[in-house]
Image 1 (tube, one colour):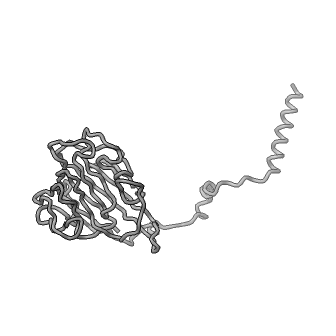
Image 2 (cartoon, rainbow, N blue to C red):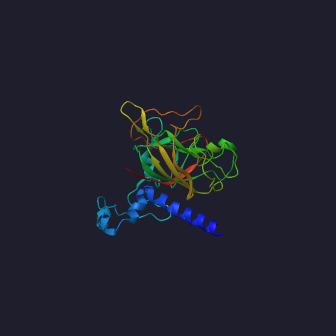
Image 3 (cartoon, rainbow, N blue to C red):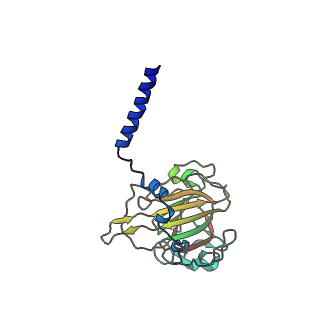
Length: 267
């Protein structure tokens, strides 16, 4: 027993000697900083991290989807038909324009008279209450940001189609996170935050377009980066274009209706 105790004591002493001979281990920077005395830490006042450079503008939010005070109304009634022209040129629109704006089949799409880039866009839309057609032939339309990047409108209530072509899809690029569609004839909402693409002076893409979309208040596209303009056939590819272009509404043969369209331009 005495021999065992002696051996244990010798082992402990040897361990202590080795520990004294080894250089001290360096502490991680964060841990070392935490263990520094308070007087050695960088001293800052709370005011030094307060940002007073830009005072947010005071606006009045809209109620129940009404436009906020800093929005531009693109369609709120027949008086706003002048904000739109035929998609091919500047001819007056041929859609029904009263309290709501309704597609007249075979008359062509329409576009805004003004051009827009980065924006927040609110659109209320309704597919026909009388259901006709299936898949892409049922309540089809679309909102084209800059006339190139389509957010699909479709009657996707109990109506199967390819998923990157259903309501709320970035057409043939991004499937919506969920199907938040209401039934035929019910008013629905899109709330869109769009960031326009940026091109270099030589025409090469510097930064793609981005979409964030809420469908009936539900997030369905979360800051997705587009691969180019939305195409019916083929692989999308960017081509340099202006910083701002008109917004288009598609005529796809179905009498889809719109109302309460407003936009806020973003920096």
